[in-house]
Amino acid sequence: MAGSIPGFGFKKDPEAYSAKARSYCGGFSMLPYGIQSMLKEGHRHLSGLDEAVLKNIDACNQLSTITRTSLGPNGMNKMVINHLDKLFVTNDAATIVNELEVQHPAAKILVLAGKAQQEEIGDGANLTVSFAGELLQNAEELIRMGLHPSEIIIGYTKAINKTVEILEELVEEGSENMNVRNKDEVISRMRSSIASKQFGQEDKLCPLVAEACIQVCPKNPANFNVDNVRVAKLLGGGLHDSIVVRGMVLKTDAVGTIKRVEKAKVAVFAGGVDTTATETKGTVLIHNAEQLENYAKTEEAKVEELIKAVADSGAKVIVSGSAVGEMALHFCERYKLMVLKISSKFELRRFCRTTGAVGLLKLSQPDPDDLGYVDSVSVEELGGARVTIVKNEQGGNSVSTVVLRGSTDSILDDLERAVDDGVNSYKAMCRDSRIVPGAAATEIELARRLKEFSFKETGLDQYAIAKFAESFEMIPKTLAENAGLNAIEIISSLYAEHASGNTKVGIDLEEGVCKDISTVNIWDLYITKFFALKYAADAACTVLRVDQIIMAKPAGGPKRDPPAGMDED
Image (cartoon, rainbow, N blue to C red):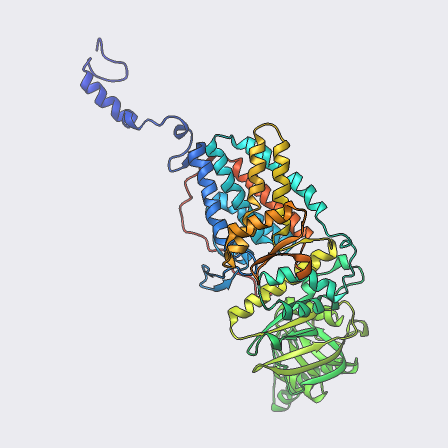
């Protein structure tokens, strides 16, 4: 085999050689090179400004375009149908971004920023997402002008630090001292967050929420627990029928015939009120009818003994965490005990907190210390539904419930979100009660002062700071557009007012003019603004820092179902 190519049994025949070689290498045309040769096939790799950065910015813009039209009191509602076919009609951005299953990794960062704001403050998620989107859109213009993303990030970081400084200066004097139990002060701070969800209803809703919050505010307001203000939604009636109950409202009827008890002690049994099967298995041999009768009687006697022990301890109300047996119920009636059944364990915990009772595991005689106390437990009919109202007037830090009435489920859900936002802003004001002018007055002032700051900077980041300042215009512009006003006119007149030193001039949406907002009493919490702007800038910088996206091939196999949802709590 002289002259043959080693490893191949051919003479020097180029055609045969190349054919054989091709079959060995799987075809020369297919040899992977570059990043393909490193990663498994099926992956996707996007890099460079056009593919990665601008695509990311575009995805984030799409998300903020969705939330932006829901910003402010005249914000539009969105109809979102999630993967379980549940319908949401709302303008609450936190709910919208939660229910949209956002797939794009960059847009997810914005969603996370919105969620962080919701966790931290409970209000202002829309501002976070919309503002971050606006920052990114302006960054895109800068990138197209030829700035490098890292220069933009440096500029944005300088700008957000300056923003925080300016925001401190805009705080209304004297607002850091606040009596959180003064209803009027609470309402003035809560109005803007409730009005942004339910415009026109805030004068009815605010007093309700404020009253409920003040009722359960502990000695040290910093320990205020949002969970202590409950919402019960009952169909029928209208918002004007809504009331605040000091205590709990259970959406179930009492078991048994006793429907009303006053000034009573309460025993709570988490395991249910019933005869329990014994732990050990046993066989009973019965010879005649007498023994059978006695056997049944002993069971009755045993149940009676247990119920009598509870009645003797002074309890008039028994609350069961699960089923109530027939025989046990019979004896409860005989001893004039009212029986309630609360199947949700969260509700049961709250009930214990309201009454100060201790949940016992099995039916036995309770200690006097384990009993709770209620002023009244009564079954009442509200809008065709029977509800049990548990009142506890004297217990200071217990639970209060806002009973909401409305004509449809989606209206009630939206009202509940407004109440939640109100309660969350109450918690925020317990932490930090400083306020800044609302109605876009703060934003225009920030934009103006940052613009001036950018002129003093040298270097390329001044362009980024100027764009950051411009981004603030999105808020008055959106508020005006959502209310159907001429945005350009309003922004220019706002700038003119602020330039002449009236820093508290904002948009009065009802009349469609610019007004000093201290006369119409529209204030935003400083802490809400502070976190929203900070999270938005962080999210925008995170998205801009990305220059390559490398996605592995999705794993095959059946898709796993997400874990089942929690019960409605």
